[in-house]
Length: 122
Image (cartoon, one colour):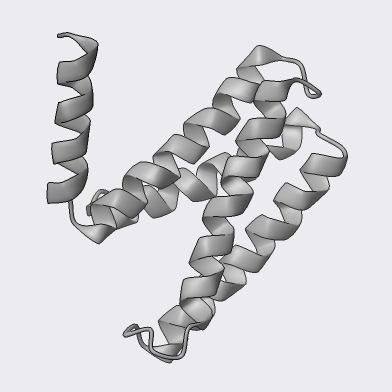
C-alpha cells in the first residue's frame, strides 16, 4: 500500500472510530512507545524522553476530562480516572527526572489494561 493510501486509511479509521476506540488506540500507542524505549536500552535517549512526554500529555488530557464539571460520566468513575491519572502522572514525572526502565512496566501495563477494557477485551 502506498504511503498516501495508508494515510487516507488512517484518516478514515480515525473519523469512523468511537471515542472509546480512539482512547484505546492512543493508550496502546503510549504503551508501545514506552516499551520501545525500554527495548532501546538507553534511558537518556530522545526516544525515551519522547515516550514519557507522550504518556504525560495523554494522561493530562484524561485528568482534565475527568475533572470537567460537564463530564457525563458518574462522579465515582470520574474520581477513579482522576486517581489513576494522578498516579500515572507522578510516576511519569519521576521517570522523566530519573529514568529507570524497571519502573516503566507499571505504566505500560496500566495503559494496556485500560485500553483492553475500553476495547471490551479482558
